[in-house]
Image (tube, rainbow, N blue to C red):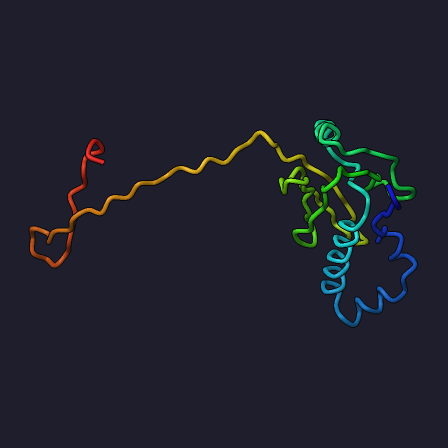
Length: 165
């Protein structure tokens, strides 16, 4: 591993950042917090960490895939340093969610991270690799349309029996 990089701990930064309160007063707290969350997600994706909060099965599954779990991040219990296998990466979906994607483009885990200084949280959920999506082929048959016997201007079709399809 070249260099360990952790996401910024926004809860600690907010205590030292007098500009945050001024920005919230000028731009509005919703705008500033949304930006902080978006920036935090980008910072997390660029880091060499994963959340510490995950089910034991998730950790075991990732270790089986080649992820090496290192030590926790000093002064930030939300994250731990990791070494990802060659070609694996974190991909941001929005300001709260990212995916851990393997070298073949398969999503291995979904990762939640809320970077808002007042309510930081993070967790990881393993995506099952055994589940498959089956696509069914639907066969359509064009049916002849006939005028309704009442002569009311409506049309109908006689439904075929299933054996004729």
